[in-house]
Image (cartoon, rainbow, N blue to C red):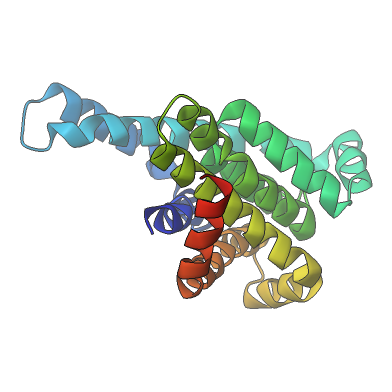
Length: 220
């Protein structure tokens, strides 16, 4: 259940970017720093707020830097040539495994889509790849832990893979539905991110007993 919730929670980054709230990133960074340094009952929130602000500030810098690229013909041709869904999925998976941050990659996709540098289906495919790639963190961590830890990591991996496998055959109608919800490219990508994770969580909860048996069978 925590894993299902965490998958939805990680979409907050893309929502903040889509609503054009990147400008508040420096304030979040400063708030986290002050909470760490000033001893209060809220000091233990300082470090997570600071690092969230740091990642958010990085995305803000990226959004500024990609702005001139949207008129670069070489960049446009390069991105336009890559329309294969499975290539996008693989890119999202590999980059997330390498950087160990699905939220960062998802945020970058919203920024690139908002700048007109990637199409919706390209961005959606990469988002799906990040959902699988992010499970590598738990798999690596569980390698030296007990069987319950290994089961939790396997649950994360299987759940995210099944979500992607189930949506792939319906990618076209799902994409058309999400595109119809907003005229903003950035908002479309952020909606895809959150709606996919909410739908996956609902399915996971409906079939949780079957899912538990599957994971127990995989990690005895």
